[in-house]
Amino acid sequence: MNRINFKKINLIISIIFNYRSYLVLSYRLGWWHINSFSDSPYVADVVAHLNRSVIRNSVLDIGCGLCSILRRINYREKKAFDRKQNILKAARLVSRFHNIGNEISFERFDLKTDRVTGKFDAVIMINYVHNINPDEFKQIIRRIYYENLNSLGEIIFDTVSFKAKQYPFNHDANHLVNDLDGSLVLIGRYEFGRSVYSFKKNSTTEWE
Ligand SMILES: C[S@@+](CC[C@H](N)C(=O)[O-])C[C@H]1O[C@@H](n2cnc3c(N)ncnc32)[C@H](O)[C@@H]1O
Image (tube, rainbow, N blue to C red):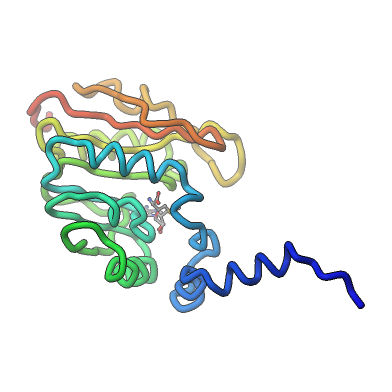
């Protein structure tokens, strides 16, 4: 008789009993979406950071994925943007079962080609911006800062220093915000050289 491979059996059982497996299959998501909240330690830190914020009227998460962050923060108005329709459908379903506070509104949106409208106390862009070249990302941050951020609002973004094909651009956080009036604060450092930052607007400066 073959030796029982407990590691494999354990993996199969955890896939079967993980509701995310059904989401991945039903909505044709990438398999990395099986990862749970605890697999992304930066999520817990960003959630704690935003829930400590004094002004929590409006938040926008661009590239929201399954809304691991947005579903755990307590803001009056919560908006979720993603470029993939299947992700938005899956996120909408998950948010019916697990979401703190007010309902999330969902919209298809591509950060590289679409323009954000409205003003927010926090705008989040995490775990995909390493695919956007530094000049383009700097310009995106600048536009969001002037057009979409309330006074004392913050932009939450990440950089990855790990050199690999899946991380084409290793951003320098200081370079991205050095021509804007605000304070850059490190929220945390994680594996693959990921750093998550908050850049908080100091003034009510208008678009130049
Ligand atoms: C790895 S997931 C991260 C999800 C979430 N931000 C987080 O950190 O938990 C990346 C998400 O960004 C979305 N995305 C990638 N490029 C995008 C773009 N240019 N505009 C909007 N969404 C984008 C993907 O569809 C995917 O859902």
